[in-house]
Image 1 (cartoon, rainbow, N blue to C red):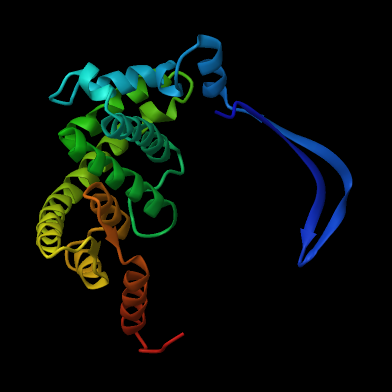
Image 2: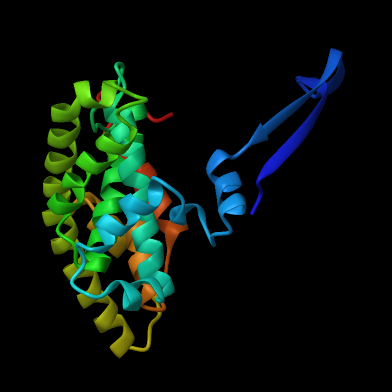
Amino acid sequence: MEVWNNVFMTFQRRGGQLLPLPRANVDTGMGLERMLTVLNGTASVYQTAPLDAIYQRIASLSPTGVEERTSHPELNRALRILTDHLRSAVFILGDPNGVLPSNQGGGYVLRRLIRRAVRACQTLEIQPQRWAQTAELVIDRYGSVYPELHEHADRIANALIGEGERFEGTLRRATAKLRREIARLRAEGGDRIPAEVAFHLYDTDGLPIEFTSEIAREAGFSVDVDGFEQLFDQHRQRSRPDGSVR
C-alpha cells in the first residue's frame, strides 16, 4: 500500500517534446487515511475512523453475520464498495455546487457510483434504500468539518434513495435475464456472452456493459466487449438527429 509519494517535476511536455521546467520542484503527497492505517496497525483504511463506523453500520444491514461476511473476499469487496461509494456520493451531493445523477459530466460519475453500490447491495442482500439511509451516519461523522453536508441533507437523501430505487428494479430484471442466458449458453457448452446479448441488455434493459461483464465473470464467463462497442457505435450513429456519420 502506497502511503506517501514524491514526484520530481523536471520537464513539461509540449506536443512531442519534453522541455526543461524553468524551476524544478518536488510534488509530494500523503494519504491521510493510509497513514492512519500504518500508525494504528490496522489491515486497511476501512478499519480507521470514521470509515470503520460506516463500514460496520452497512455490514449490520446484511442478513448474514459480520464474521462470515468479512472473511469472504467477494462479500468483503462489496462492503468496501458500499462504504467508499456512499461517502463519495454524499460529498458530491452535499457540495454547494453539487450535481444530481444524470447522463452527463459529474452527474454521470455520481450515477455510476450509486448504481455500482446498488449492485453491491444485491451481492450482500441489502435493500438499497437502507444503504442510502446510512448517509445520515456519514453526515453526522463529517458534518462538523463540512457543515454543507447538514445543509443539503435532504438533497443527499432524496437523490440516493430515488436513484437507487429506480435502478434496483432495472438491475433485478436484467440480472435475471442475463443469468438465464448464461444457463442456456452453459448447457450448450459455451462460456462467452455474445455481443448481441450484451447490447440487448444495455439497450432494452438498461444494464451497463461493465455490470454485464462483472456478472458474467462471477459465473466463469467472458463477454464480447469489442463486439458490443461496435454495436453501440452503430446505434449511436443511427441516433444522430441529422443522420450524419462522423
